[in-house]
Image (tube, rainbow, N blue to C red; front, side, top):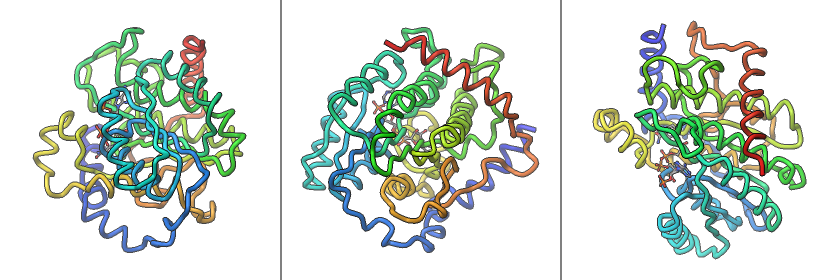
Length: 319
Ligand SMILES: NC(=O)c1ccc[n+]([C@@H]2O[C@H](COP(=O)([O-])OP(=O)(O)OC[C@H]3O[C@@H](n4cnc5c(N)ncnc54)[C@H](OP(=O)(O)O)[C@@H]3O)[C@@H](O)[C@H]2O)c1
């Protein structure tokens, strides 16, 4: 089954996820969707010092939004902030140092942030593909800690503040790679079998899609979406997938093209009928979360078990 899923997914990727896939899809984009003045709206973007996250932060800053870059490395974060300010002439761009794989740091940040700031839009963009099984200082597997648990805790901690904000939105940067995985709620930290970083990453990205669907059901006042940026030429792809990068070089999207749907979901005023809450987006439209005949659907009971486990871990680290 995994050979079938991977083959179908790769063929789909070559058609849709590449630069040419973006160029074809973008013919249907309305430029006016992004003609928005964001003055007075506050955006929290994780992993915003690099790649797709930085490109999205730049677009928000260009439109006058208040931008909060949530990054783990001060030097890289401040360099990104200075660059974004220089290109946008918007001084309202701020750095917050948080390691998203540390549940305590995520909680601490969210609590402190909401005491001082409002948040209209959260973009869960920070992500990693660690190819060896490594543990954080809390004993959590690193991909899970960053991609799934960090995203879950930050969103959970910011939901009360988002509910008080006008037109609140949460966008989670998942990946089309999740299409090759069925939810595995029994081994969230990959303790069984041989560890495969690519599959761990894809499993985390599947979990993000399920989390988004659940949040949308539970919190109608907030618009939730998950999305796939396509295959974009970023530092993460270059370092975590060097063979893929070498093979696809020249056919990958730019960082701005990868960020386009994040920006659209974050800023557009289009009718929510065209962008339902809880959906998975690619090139500004909701798309299927399963490949045909791939047997990747999970039951409501299985998804509930994922949520229960995440809630247990979230509460364990709550200050
Ligand atoms: N590029 C693609 O083709 C593609 C495809 C599908 C999905 N995505 C998703 O797009 C998102 C952005 O990735 P990218 O491709 O733009 O790569 P990138 O340029 O390497 O950006 C990843 C960002 O996440 C940050 N990050 C990673 N671990 C973190 C942690 N523990 N705490 C705080 N920040 C952390 C990185 O910070 P450092 O600079 O400090 O490492 C960086 O700012 C990811 O969620 C990725 O899974 C990308």
